Every structure is written in C-alpha cells, then in structure tokens.
Length: 344
Image (cartoon, rainbow, N blue to C red):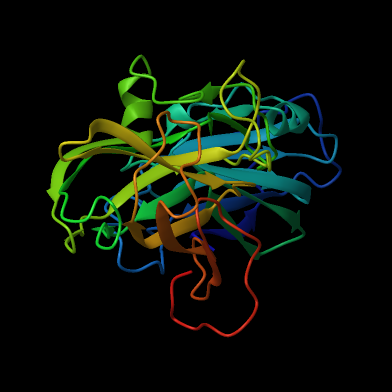
C-alpha cells in the first residue's frame, strides 16, 4: 500500500451535487463522503526518495452499477462528495492529468497514462475500491505508483588482473533504453509509446530525460568506486526478448546502459544489462556494478561475459524483503536459495 485514501461516509436527506440527474433512486438519501489523503509512505531505504511520496493532486471518479459516472471530485486536501445509497466503484488517481471526461468506467479503464506525466517529485499513482453505500460506512483505497524504479548505488573499477590493469575509467553517463512510455491506469501493458529506442535519444523531452538519463562525467581509479546513487523510472515492459540487438526497431527488453571511457583506450564503450519483464511499482536495485574488462562498441550489444559483474535485488516498492538475483550482463530467474553474500 503506497497511499491510503480514507473515505468517511455519513448519510442525510440532502440531494445535491449529483452528476446523474436522469435517474431518481427509490431511496434518495444521500451520503456525505469526506476524503482524506495522507502522505504516501515508502519503506525502501538507502535511496534518495525525495518527492516519491508526494501527493500534489487527487481525483476521485465514482461509477454506478451501469458503469456511468456518478460523481467526480478533485483536490489536494479533504474533499466531499454526495452519493445515494447503492453500489459503486471508486477510482482514485494521484498526480495524474485531468480525467474528468472519462464518463464511463470502460473509458477510464482504457485510458493511457504516459511516462511523461511523471516527474521525480510527482509520480502518478492509481487505485480503486468497491463501495456499497447502505448507511454510515468507510472505505480505504490503496493506490500504487504506476512506474518502476531502477537504482544503481555503486560502480567500481575492477580492472586489476585484466589487460586494462591500472587504467582509470570515466563514467560518462548512465541511462535506460527501450523504455515503455505508456500504460493503462489499471496497470495493463499498453506499449504504444517507447523512449530511447535501441540507445539514448537526445531528442527526448526534458521530462523523459529527467526520468531515464543521468550525465555523470566521473573519473574512477582502479580499485575505487563511484558511490553516488542514480535512479531511473520507466513503465512496465513485459518483453523477455533479450536476443534482439540493433536492427529495425521492435519491442524488446528494457536495458540499463553505462557509457564509459577508458584511459588511453577509448572515449566510449558500453556496459549493457538486460532487464526482462519489468513490472510496475517495483524496484530494481543494483547494489554494486563492477567493471572488469572493456565494454561493447554499441548500446545494444552485450560485452564479453567477463566484462562486468553485479548484484541486483528486485522488490515491490513497499516490500521489505527481496528476491535476490545475480548475474553477468543479464538478470536471471529469481534465486530461491540461501543468500551467500557473494557476487557471481
């Protein structure tokens, strides 16, 4: 649960404020619904969470049993709506564009959220709950972030023992490619918009760049580390295609890319990590990526299997436990044994 919307309901005979004047219910008693929105919570630690729990705007869309909108309300604090006794589906959208025009539940369910609707301090969240109004009652709506988060905590120069021994590397930038930029509000995959197709695209909007690209330009001597965390956001991408490289664009797995220069060798080589089947509201955290040999020549190709090693944990954004995964160049299936504490 990321954010709880608490609806406190009290009934009276006042019959005002309804969007549906075409239907007069047998029981015209209206219930007063007061909405309180606490600050979203997060249990993830060790990462700059500035703004990730911010609630700057809430929309409530209420649909009756026939799927037509009964009430709409928006605000940033407490809100009040009036409902007749009956059964409803209530949708809560946080930090989302105005959707007051979604007059039917089907229209809302088919509406798309776009990655560009998000910002670091204003992440889109959504949730719903069924409500049967028979008298005084309350309901809690759980809303979850639509985006996924990819975090790199540390990058280490591990060239010792290779032909690059003694070389300093320059971390030019980090970014994610093949990023899905559209998602339905119910969390279903949309895949109509894609960002950084097969490589970093400098023509992307400033909003998308802020979510998917970090320019670094940091020198890392052999045996040293760059310990500044870098965080990226993307929408769910169920593709498990880690084989397609370059060529004509087609849907494929999302990828984390490190653009690195190596002293007296090259200004740019690329360390690519496949991230198959990205899920929404999930954190993919690389506690350390160690570079041990030269990277690939382009942003889609995998380097030699000895080029890097890493440890990555995959957790629900609110989860306190992780499925530990380890691999070289590509995330593997969740490892279900005991944690050895060692890199692979």
